[in-house]
Image (cartoon, rainbow, N blue to C red; front, side, top):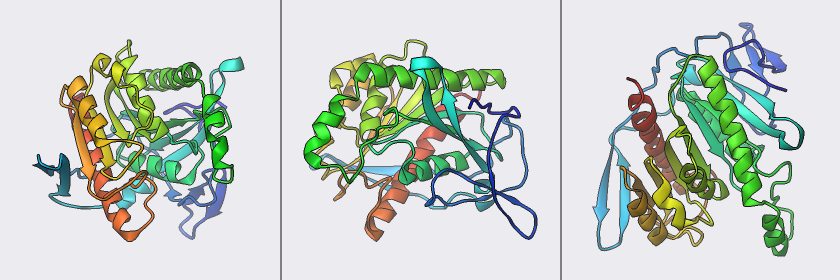
Length: 317
């Protein structure tokens, strides 16, 4: 089904009615945290959540950056209660793709974000939970299905992975991302918004962040965030004209720190690499321990400050 950011076409099912008659809107995952939704607001309402400055200490001998917050604070609970979500069908015919839109209903800053998933796809609970948190901070987050209904699953034999990966044709994936991007741009423009989009990607999606920014001839994107991107073609980095934030761990064999440093130099334009010591692949959106929870929270706040500075403040005039 099609949907609009500010029109009457959102669809959701009522899961429960609380004693104060707030409605709980169902998302599509049984493991997702549901929040009460009880009012609407303009897409252009001002952002109210507090963003935090970060400081970085660079240790040249180890080529690592240690990021620490000046101040830590979770999302505003009231604002997070006002996020709506709906599943979409975008395009038509052979170009039809599914996607999920998380819309900040309260304190919406009018900025769109494309979120590109890892190999487990846009329906995975870790991806949707992260998208929800981004929306909590005022954004309209669109997560498209990059795999046409065939994401990788943990129950598949590992020796089948390359065969599965070969079916994810780069041209088709790039085309689907453009289709989703064009839809989101159209929705923002129809709401009277001309701000540039941001793009966030994890693992597989983190690699595609580089591809899509390098081919962004329409200049729709204003900034990118790549979490431990995989199979990155660094030869296209010099075609990127916006700053990119790279977040990874120094023990991630799929995303070497040296590659990220090369990308940072090739792109320039204020790009930044943030490396978390002792962390491997996927820690920021799939933390598996209390220690990873802490670093995942810090990584999220680094990203949040980056998006605010590059997209909200940078496009406020």
